Image: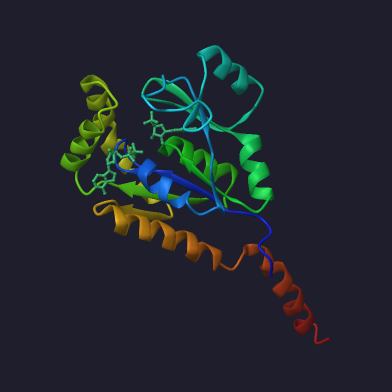
Amino acid sequence: MSHSKGKLYVISGPSGTGKGTICAELLKDINNEFSVSMTTRAPREGEVHGREYYFVSREEFLENVEKGNFLEHATVFDNFYGTPKDMVIKRLERGRNVILDIDVQGGLNVKASMPDAVLIFILPPSLAELRKRLIGRNTESPEIVEKRLSKALNEIKFIGEYDYYIVNDDIETAVSKAKAILIAETCEVPDKVRPIIRKYEQEQEKGE
Ligand code: ADP
Ligand code: 5GP
């Protein structure tokens, strides 16, 4: 039973909950690759084009939508974000795990088009702690911080659609849990073996 294809992992959760921090730890394993999204958001200090995101104009983004280049795309906090399709498919075919850090709308769209995707939701220990982290990160204006916080509960309401959840209280524990999920997923019996078993069952039923 060989697993020739990699697995697709979606990491979602409210802004500031620790998705990026957890992803960075998972990406230390060379089998895991990050899917760099395209966005119309302005780069934050220290962000590099092609590493955190492909930073593009609205026109360029919409051209990519028209060409069908996205696996999914969504408007998040007034900006466009999209997952480039080809890159994800090629890496999975090469047997690499691909990690998407995308919002809940994106996660659900990915699950609909790629049902084997594994969806992981990262929760903050509390909304008060989420606020502290978003303010402490110091990457957004107070107005945008409030906008992001006001969306947190709406996102959390979708947790039932996800396969796993992790409360990111202590970062080391949260990272260990994320790694454990990735390991457990490699032990899953793939659905494609079921037709093979069925073939032998049918043979036995016929008494051959
Ligand atoms: P997201 O990618 O979900 O928006 P980040 O990974 O950027 O969130 O984390 C937001 C802020 O919270 C960062 O400054 C990060 O260092 C910090 N952080 C992440 N996890 C924890 C944790 N478990 N405890 C305290 N601070 C954390
Ligand atoms: P940020 O601006 O903080 O980098 O990201 C804002 C939100 O957009 C986060 O919830 C992040 O997961 C989400 N996001 C990033 N890239 C994509 C993407 O390609 N598609 C979707 N749907 N959401 C994304």
